[in-house]
Structure formats: C-alpha cells, structure tokens
Image 1 (cartoon, one colour):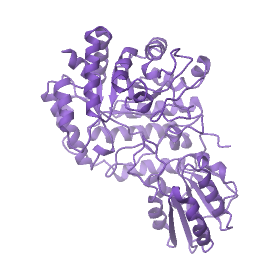
Image 2 (cartoon, rainbow, N blue to C red):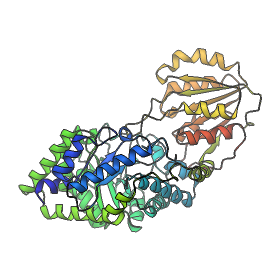
Image 3 (cartoon, rainbow, N blue to C red):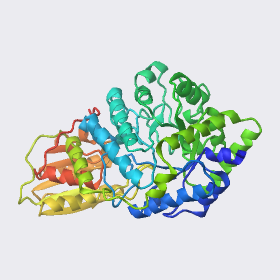
Length: 523
C-alpha cells in the first residue's frame, strides 16, 4: 500500500448531495479513504439512502478495497438524528434516562441498528456517554442520558449492545468527557479543570464500563483537560497523553479511536484542520474525521502521508491503525451482504417499530412540577404558544421544527388556535399574545431553552400571569421546568420530534398516562 493510501485509510470524509459526488469518488479511488460520514444533506427517502450506500460500496469494491467502506452517521436519536421520512423516530438519550429502564435503552439501540443496517449504514456515531452535570452545557444537554455516572454507564452500555446485536458498529463519545463544559467545541475550545481522581469517579465511569463490555470505537473530545495534558490549550484529540497514555495504556482500549470533526472551531481556529489531523494521528488516533470541505480532506491526507514519509508519524503505528479499522469492519459487514441488500425491508418505519417506541415515550415523558390541575376538557378553547426553532446547536439537524406540536394537538382536540413566536421578537409579540391569551380557557406553552434566555422566561411568565390555566411543556432542556413553578402542569419531553409531540398531545387531553422521572436535578 502506498503512503498516500495508508494515510487515506485514516480519513473519514463527508460530502454534499444525495448521490455519490465526484469528490468522494476521487478520494475512494486515489486514497482508499477509510469511510464516509452522512449528514441530513445526504438523506432522502429510505430507497435513496440505500441506493447511495450501495453505490459507495460498489465504488470502493471497484477501487480494490479489501474490506467495505465505513459508512457512518450521527443517529443519536432525539435532538441529533439524520434519518427522516420512512424511518422510525426513536427516543434520544435523556428521554431514555427519564424512562430509567436499561431494557428500553437496549430496545431503542437494537431498533436503531436494525434500521441503519437495512439502509447500508454500518457505523453509528453513538451513544453519547458524557455525564450532563452542567446545566449550562450548550452542546451536550439532552444528548446525555443524565447526570448520574452509574445510570449513564448502564444505559449507554445497553444502547451500545443493542446496536451491536443488530450488527452495527458503535462509538462512545466524547472521550474523556464533554458533559461538564459551558462552551460548545464547535465554536471554541472548552476546558475541564477537574483533577484525575474526579475524572475517574465521574467522567470516565461509562467509558470504562462500555470498554469492558466490548466497545467498538471511541470518539475524542475537542476539550482541554489540564489534569491530563500539560501543554496549554491542547485538546484531548491532539494529546498523546490522553489518547495513547490514558485511553490505550491505562484503560486498555484496543478498538478504533476516531476524532470528532476536525473542522470544528476548537481545532480549526487553533492549530488548523490540516496540521491538526497530523497532530491527532501523532497522538494515537486511528481515524481523522473531516466532514465538509474536500480541499481540507485531500490536504489532510497528503500532509499525513508526508509526515509518515519524513518520520514525524510512525509508519508502524499507522499499520496498526489500519489493522484495527479493517478488523472492526470485517466483524460487522461483508461484501456479500452488501450485494444481497438491494431493497428496503418492510420493517423500515413499520407500525410494529412505532408501537415499540411509543411505549418508551410514555415511560419517559415527565410531569416535572406545577400547581396541579386537570386535563384539557372536551369543549375548552385552547391557545398553543410555541417558539420557532432557532435554538438548535450546530450538531443538530435544522430540518426538524417545533411546529409539529400544533398538528398533533389539533389531532386530539377540536378547539385549538396557535401562535408561533419568533425568539428574536418576544418583546414585540408579548403584549398582543398576552391580550389574546385571555380569550381562551386553557394555555399550552412550549419552552425551548428558556432557562438560558431571560426574554423567553419573561414572556412565558406574563402568559401564566393572565390567570388562564397554563400547561408548560419544556421541549428540550428540562432545566426550563424550574423556571415556572406557578404553571398548572409542567412537563419535560427532552426533544421535539413528531413522536414525542404525539404522546404529549395525548397527555394534555387525558388520553395517555406518562411515568418519566427527571434524570437531572433542576433546582
């Protein structure tokens, strides 16, 4: 294998479009890249996804690959999901944490893997095993199972095992922990200053537990840990003491280590994507992920190849990385099954899958407080007030909207009017909306990260202050629930998917009971 192809095997690349691009074809033939990552921009109907993944695999086979391509995706479920129409909506981590039954995590993981596998996606960049012990974390939050290290550990392990049962590779992220940060690494470099003892007692617990249970891959965090790395502002992704010293040597992980996207600002604004890719391989990672720009992907491969040639990267280490990557792929996918899987199976997005997940939503959605009150009566005039989704973090898919709640509530109640609020214009819309609210018998108010936004809290407070019985539904962070104790009933859904809203609408009118318990403290 040439050095260019050895370097290429260490690359996971993204591309635009629902069909194979010329750029990704070039990377496959010229460099034998290890795999691709799919985003919402690549996702169509199930038939389109399967056609895309098969096309990529057949291109790799024609290019002379010994083992199939890694085809990866961030299908965490909940607020971070890429699959859309024709697939099953599956609960995300914090809703599973609220359901508090590891069997549900196993079931959700297995169903996730089953549908991904049927679409030709063989590697899921999940589960998130970060401990969400910082209410101000802007990027993890409800992507975590909760704040208790041992509960997170068990739920994550079962999610991982469920996906593995379905023959899909899994990824623990983000090592050695991204939960206790107040900075989004897409935008800047977070720092976690805990000492080593604390890290072993909290952040590292689920990693150690899942490694012991047979973890396939681990994704590094673009976070600086002074207790682990003496060089100032060096992210874990680029730290040999973290990747090789802690993860490989101390924790004994023998699987594949991948970076998070090297175009994130925590890397790009510092060392830069290309030089950072070299530094990450020197630290001991096996796969470098460059998710967007073709120029950076090719430059990174060439720079890694150059570093191997001049001895800055140990070629023996690269050979071991390639062995790990090829071994992981060979354990989960074969050319024969790719060639045989030419059509989407009937179970994709089926009523049976829907029913299995509906049970979990009912067990996870949480009544988190309030003064009490009865369900919406048959003849009540209801005003639904909800914010337009402008709060999604960079990792979330912008295709999914909060407006689905209006449709679901109207499906179960005849007298619903709707006001959608632009988060940038709370003050402008406040007086008119509060005045309108007084004309109704009941209010349903959705909040979206209100705990972090004073104008939204003030707006919701004035609606509750009208005296019209108000149900508040925190549709993302559960920390919103602590802000409105005077509301009639306060619910947490942890995500704003159609399936979540369907169950929530039924709860509001008394058709369904829920049993979730908060997986984080909100006071």
